[in-house]
Length: 352
Image (tube, rainbow, N blue to C red):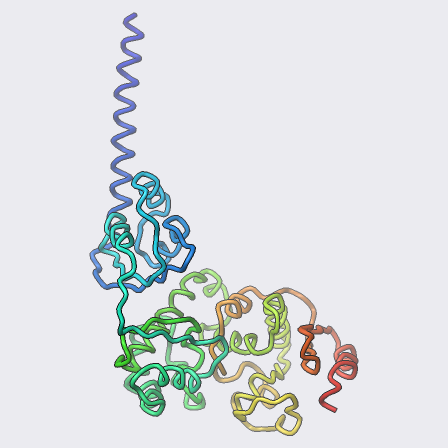
């Protein structure tokens, strides 16, 4: 009987210890990540729930633990989440974040939205921003290309280096504004404000692939450069890593990339047939120079960045998209020039 009483006492003490440890761990992991009160714009889309946005909160360093955040949600069952852009900080903790999310969308009648499509060029983005804000395209381009702003950007972001100050680059920030939809405070926002929004988003995307970036032989600037080429050349998402693999194969044997994407950017014309321009002497023309061009020729999507970081391993050195047939999205890959030439003769009838 005494043994039973001792065992019961042991169970009580053991349970108390477990509960105490569990509660301590819970309180630690739902506490604020830091004292940083800087607000971050977190976009919650229609259909999202508190549980489906767990990874978004973690990626933005707003919660310490995905597990304990989910436990908190299961315990307190907050009211349904509304689609909106919320302003959250690392100093809120899980309780504060959930309370802010429960308030729902606070609509600001002055806000404006801009959408930056994948593959667009800096000047085109300036046009988009100018159409939605009280800034002219000329003023926007002047700010974005000023040496003062370029220096400030390099100082602010670790992934941006002096590589963008190469005098042969047309626009230093070409390729660095991430394509997405952005909510701006009002029409009076500055060009700097808009640029930082897009650069912040690129930083979030790159942060997801730090391991792959560290393992890559390319710098971030070179990754974005190659990604901008893949963005233009690949028709289907499934083609992106295969196209990236073709360019890596060429780089590995010092073979010219010969990408129309780079030639089009070099001459600032987008054509079906570039036959008369192959010898244009431009640091962007990969028909003229071996290796990667001096910088990106457009704004690559996350899918193209991922393709460059995880290219398909194959033996293809050539590819050809059937651009003469608007109904076809087929890209033909070849190991030899003879096979590639056969595809060209068969399908590119509109260029003859």
